[in-house]
Length: 386
Image 1 (spheres, rainbow, N blue to C red):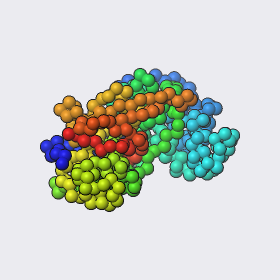
Image 2: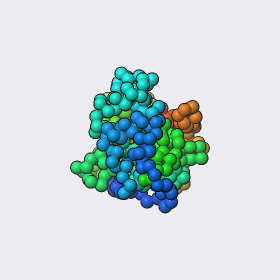
Image 3: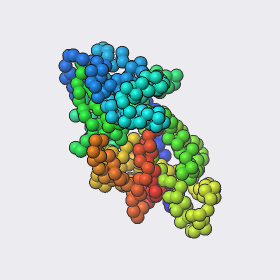
Image 4: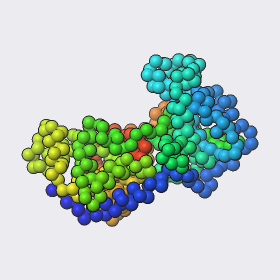
């Protein structure tokens, strides 16, 4: 049996602290010294989009979403992440269920945005791509994992008037991204802000991490492990609460069902063949010590949101909710490789994560699943802390 009880005492504190501290997330504006570039007088953000032919479809969505007056006001300054017409055509193709081909004339795409795309949807998407203050690309930090920066989109005004969904700009020597999508061009200054172009239209997340884990059949054993961990009488339901917390900001490395079956079969001494039904394995998880299961689960969670593009190209140890610091515990080893896609930008070609006690690194098989309170990467091994 894997023994991590002592480690979990630390992990319990870190998890509780993270959830409480992050309850204040997504509120207000982050003040970044030097983040406001010198901008000239002249056209506003709205007028600049209207005058730029290659931004005509995004401009049409700004109008559809009722956001033109917001970005045309000179009272406040904003950063707008703009998908150019090529990226917008891809969006319309998907949003129309494939009925509008990517190669259709822009007038056809524009008509879909103006007539068929719900105004509320357009407003939410545009709002998620607008951030307060003018954020110059040079002011985006290069530290791991990224900058958490609020948009102007409030997903639940009835919960709090101050709630904002956050975006995640990041930068390295090789390029810059918003969330996991490349920033294709940056720092177009206007009279009331700055425009950065993105390689794709970036849409806001709509469900919580727990909603994904709870419903995905490939995560049924991760779900069972979380439920077992949440049976801890000292902190009942703590993990589900964190995974449903709008203020949380997490990264979950989620072992798939096959990965869990391999570990549990080994723990059973082979009594459970990997071909056994999922329900049998879930029942076995229910017999394991709660602290053991909880320690393993929180070892798969980072207290910051890290998209695959934020993973360093050299193996780097990062702390988890089980261990608050490296090198007091090695945490998890992460590494990624990148490829430049012509006409799109730098994207992650492969990524791995390695537990301290795993013989080999786990491959991230499904990266950058984005949710309201975090990002989830599917992996093909259960990560072991010792």
